[in-house]
Length: 244
Image (cartoon, rainbow, N blue to C red):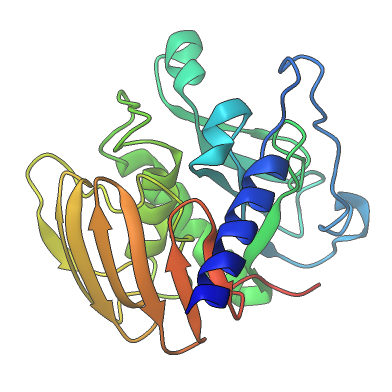
């Protein structure tokens, strides 16, 4: 146990040291990570979910996710995400625009969590567009415990049956269900969850395994794709990410 404990400590320290940028946001990289197929070469419908460590000190604690898609008749990808500054500039937390889908999140490398192509992707995009209109927290952004960017993408995942994935354990805000909702299906719709304002709760599901949420920090075990789920680190074990 002592060796395991030390390995976990070293992993935590090394992860935290490299997990976030110390640059001014204006100087941080927003270049493509070269994960997505360039728009001019992507001939089929495609839908993707990405996440990266949050910018600056926030990256020590959590992640920022977004969704991206391109229909075959489009010339560019569309990216949809939630940010606090979008409320100030546009009156809504949701930002949806044509841009590079796999851009670094201010120096932090993105991870491709989910991808569908073809008719399945087109159907998902149709549902995403409708859910964006119905998203209940458009006017709200709270870094902790939510609603925030993780709440938004979790909302999409929960409400689209064809998205069979989950945000990582360090996606603070993913468990925020709202001020008046305290239980429901898990993100993957393969089990159930109870959550008190995203601060205290538990999940038991086939895909997610067992999770306990304490003050927005998640601890759990994934049995389907064996892994420990830990705050700060996310997963230790088999990854949920798509291999490209």
